[in-house]
Length: 257
Ligand code: 13P
Image (cartoon, rainbow, N blue to C red; front, side, top):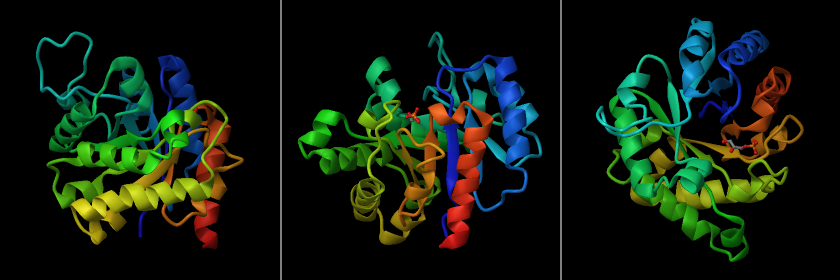
């Protein structure tokens, strides 16, 4: 049984003070939730304060990026060892990092390996552009992103990962994939690629989220799908009430099915 994971990707939002205010409210709001995992991913500078504010809570912490080298002359970058003890998760390969900052599949693969070596769980983002979607290339493209991201990882490592399927055209636009389409890509292209690379048990063990304009009003429709194990939430994670509602809605759907 895969435990759903609702993770908030705050992107470049919130000062340290604002971050603390938000996580205190999230912590209180999900205190009684045990069937769903809740994670917040603040900017680097707020990680220490947020991590302390969430001590002994059921809310996990993630970073939004990492570099794969252990240390050295990489101005502005953060090494995986610096995140150890501070975070449980780290988002890699987000389409904004791929698009604005040139992150490649090869880097995503190196980052995944570096994080796993430090006991941090990668949340690997994949997803197609609008042009690829309209040209019918989604399956082939997402499949190849998954294959490249996971190259050289063991089945045990892959089973512990999280993948987020985020169609680029649905991010921050108010547009979403239909729950049925998102479930089909997650099942066919992502679990399918993993089953080919490893085996069916590994494909069934890995948790795969949907991301792209997920919000309180639509989260239940995604969670009703059998292959969707939660959401990576941007805009709707910046307010405690909407984010907490999404966690609670997820638990409500679980209790029903
Ligand atoms: P929105 O929820 O704002 O569309 O962002 C999705 C996302 O990119 C999460 O990583």
